[in-house]
Length: 343
Image 1 (cartoon, rainbow, N blue to C red):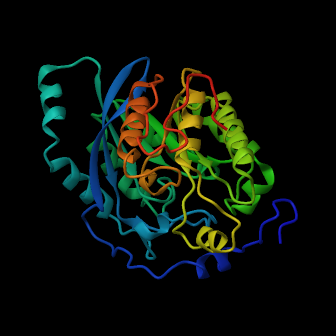
Image 2 (image 1 turned 45 degrees about the vertical axis):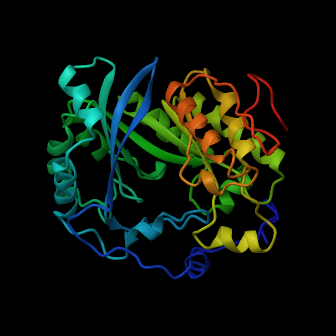
Image 3 (image 1 turned 135 degrees about the horizontal axis):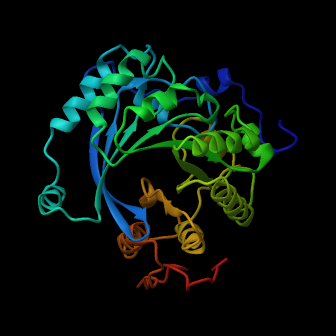
């Protein structure tokens, strides 16, 4: 038991042993997926963002909350695989609205690419260093290139890659929480000071920062979790993050599933997600909520689930408050009033 967090202590070996049995991808030269979506770019601008879900090796860190390992393989990423995957992704036709916007030269429609490998872009075992020049040549025409990386793996090669791009480089890094005991319990191998130092170094060298923050931490009440989420967003903002993505913590990786069965974890409610996002709008950074598993969150029903999700999608994109949704079945909340918490 971790006396500081009140949660059972897990070693990296135990975290791996707790994982469910799943079929994981094999190495290959095709990405796991390609997704085009519109994204808030700040100052009321919009970007058409192409996310390429790369097929590569697993991250070296064994974070207690992570389920992204399911999208990786055990072997080191083979040289040449990732450039081939990106080349294939870029050969696929973009959605009609993206193509039309490009043809018409819409000034507010930036084109971004996010290369997400569920690991570390600047770790040679995940992205072979020899592949970085080829990858840069493939994506250099985009206005912004977003890659994900652990804050402790920020090195000079970040700048070498930056210098090969025409647009901006952005590193997406997980802060998760500023609650010191819970951050240590997550087994991320990171302190808040180390995160802040990585942000400062990147920003000083002209690299933008995107940050992931968790909502619904185990071992806390709902109110405590929301408070620490707000504190974490504040810290990320103070560190200069351009974009802060709030992720409702979910089961699926193994450890959180075990805690859920033991009554030590409850997923955040739909109302909590709404309240958190509403309170962070217009405060100096793009702040969004991850809606990947929103349909599974408690506190909503079939009558309001889709309406509430679409409302949050519009808030994510427009970065302005929108009126709440009235649930015909009386779910407790479907959107608060501006500046008002529904706790």
